[in-house]
Image (cartoon, rainbow, N blue to C red):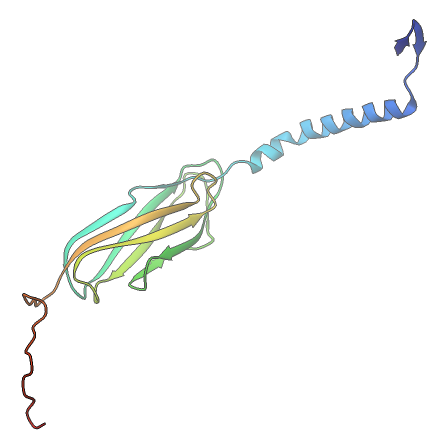
Length: 165
């Protein structure tokens, strides 16, 4: 009850209904809070290492490396996609698989060195459902040697005659 000028006034029926609705809303939210909290847990992607150096290799070699990871979060982790920087890099992963907290997995990356010589650096982007860092970059390095090297790499023979022409 409220007082206006010392005269007691009873709250209206509408005011009581609003208070009751507020109490019911609060009770409903309090009862379902654990369920909402469970939905807020999410996975966290942690790689053992985010780069690999193959060292010296020869042109045409097929290089393969497995990047291992673990879900260090409190909820499920999903690898949603993997994008290679170029066609020389192929990636294998169970796309869409859910990794439970503590579960490990790997991303296998294959690098074809057929069209390269010298220092080679390629990257792969991993997209996940992680909230803080949803995309991660993995890096591959190699020094590709050609089986035959000419020094200088280009030779100009000028206007050499062509036989039979």
